[in-house]
Image (tube, rainbow, N blue to C red):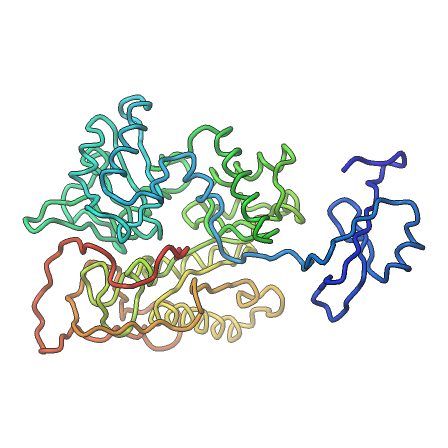
Length: 451
């Protein structure tokens, strides 16, 4: 909207019969100056106040305040369009063809990244052998739609440094074939660490050309606006996504209001901004941690055994106790907020126990409380209903490599972490399940933004 001769943006008055501000009022009209509502009231009141302005009759259309999506991954939805988007693929051969086409355009040795894989919707299986057929000269990785696992070809596994399942980091898992060979599938930290390695390290999923990123971000934001979403929190960003948003803002292309959560491996208390670049339009809201996997990924940490996608009985604890507590303390000391992903009931319990013990200790030591306490700056997320998740199964599987909780002293008062239920099965057997890839996650969740 152009400015008038006084330097102010002109006013437009909208009238209609279905204007719902959701504040208990039912105005007949509202006036807009630029991006802000300047006044509401009856038609006569706004006609008297703004006599010579443009008027728009809404013709019965419903008007409500814009929706806020408090947990989404808009930047990744945009980057999927810059990478190889395989979300619409219905066969493994379609995935293969898309990756081959991109590999033909990329210099040898550079990463080819697919995104949005939904193996439940595919006929055929995507694994290391299939991706080797896509290219032997490029490291190839395809990100599963929940972002809790990914699959890689031989060149990618070698680039990362994975040769056997024992190479998986704590809190992650590498799946194998029946003969013990890596099949390419990487769960939780086995792929999250190479994807989100921290400042100064190369990610296995580069973002592509900045101009293409901005074009894709505009497309996604336009689609969100069509759904009524005018603001959101992007629940994982790195400096790559931060710069994408900042560039859109500088160019006047950032139409929604955006809050961002920085992935914890990139957190530097010395670099945390004292002021936001634009507290209204774009802000860094806090630091994101993940304590466990996800129900939709088959990796959430639960008390009771369930048929998880990892081949284990209780999912994966992504961050160990000491690392979780250390990061929370560091973020809090910097005056920032932590946002914690915890899906399984055991993970949620541990998150709360960590906070409760720390709060008790701080109060006992005479630390100040109030608006700056960790409680007021700590968010928990369960990516769903928010209720504890207690999946059940008719059979149980053996424990897998994960950052299991320790009963050693955590440096905080209170009892040790609660332990998951012991391994069991309906027959009382404790035999180890094969460490092979399931054809699909045991859970039935589909296409949810689980991370």
